Length: 348
Image (cartoon, rainbow, N blue to C red; front, side, top):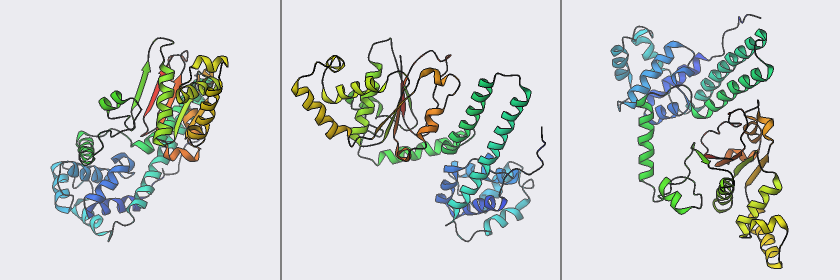
């Protein structure tokens, strides 16, 4: 195996710019904390300084030269990072934080490249060893790459209590100012929405029951309501039902026609009127996107649905994903997670 001699991707100046910009106040610190964690910094010195600054902010202390010096001294790290001279050089390096978002993106991208290199090295090592089945290597490699993709949207590494507590309290403050008591996505089931405040971003809701209890119908109805009533893009993955069967359930829910009548074709004139009206009023302008897969396709390829849906232009605005999931996949879930999107699964 070829030995890597090139340095890992990094941009020291961008890291310094981010740290220097954080001295401009609360908004600047929050902007950095929304995208970066300590491990995103390549230089250990910058990692230490960033962690000290975010810790100060989480404790409710101002982030300035004096408080940072005290925090680093408290941890006996001031001399380790180059002393007060280096702290002063960071604070004086930026005259404005107007370009901070751009600098953060550079640091984030370099961190992502380093993670990809490490993942590629791990995959390469497994290939050279030839000790695992090819399918298992592919699955492991895909999982490693996908975890990096997830971290790009949800943050990386462990988050200390001081950080997650601050963001949680800020969320409480935001909700307290809202008049709408349903803070999440409405499902159309009033009692459920009242008890849960709707489907929340990032939530995973599993609908599990014995066969033929109505799990798939419930999932379909939630997806249909979210798409048509809330006018938002919804991604529905079917690993069990074909397009005709799933389409029949959607039409049944929208038209109130008994599903057995739709399956048998025993339709009267008034039924046809309802079907045509539902196409014009509900489905033509709907943003409910369906994707059909065979269960066996996912035996070793766990994240294909996400990879495919991310290529679609509507995905950036997608607010809900639903997976009608079959069993018999070696106990593994055939799909991973979409960041910051509520999702629910119906297990048959």
